[in-house]
Length: 333
Ligand SMILES: [Zn+2]
Image 1 (spheres, rainbow, N blue to C red):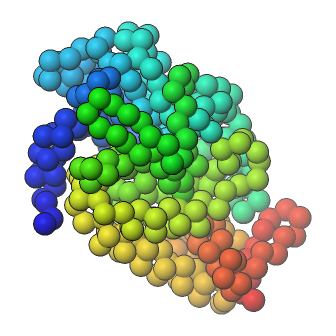
Image 2: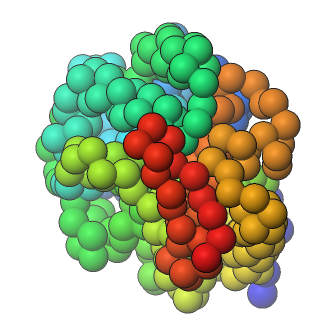
């Protein structure tokens, strides 16, 4: 049977998993943290580094009879600041262990330096794809101003793709599902058929496959959307009954949702192919043709979407990149 989102939350709560939506200053709205009442007492994601987030988390934990100090394990699902900003403060209070993908540990530990490098990388990608320099300068200062909501993270329990996270009452399979970010990790309770999916699958919005440096920190960009589509296909095959996302309500029909996401990417890919077939264009020109002049803060996001779909077309042999030394253009083959 298929649950309603409310029933899914009730079922999760019966399994000891309680959603705690924490406010963020970002357009996405609240981020879902999940308290797992087990041994150790576990919090999956923390919300951003802000007094407001900490206050709300404290109150919500209190409603369940816990304090921040009681936390024993914090699980970090991926490298984005709305999910991990409070880690350092929570660890200071509680001494909790921190579990996250081992391959991301170095970068999480070097948060400030890594964020700076990621910004440099983003500027390079934007310039190479036709975004005007003043937009990249503005975007970089926006990104710097957001950095305070993040935190460096000392991972004490590195996790492996395919490994397990054992709590007293449950066994969670650790599965890497990159695409939205290179470190997206989901946690699968096969016995209860509950998937803690963070931003890998969201109910109300398509997860943005953001162009990024790979996990090893090298400067070759990821094929974020190509990777994301592969990850979605894997998740589609799982017999999940309840998917607990990083934002919004639980997903109770993940196959249907994933099919509609895949169809959406397919449609956009064809639209971008038509635009490229009309005349060669760079990614910025394609983004403008699709969405007009978007807000500066959305420039990198829309660029990521265009490049992601162009990657799919390149892999299919229908489009090729033409590099004039300054800017990359796409043309139909
Ligand atoms: Zn995210």
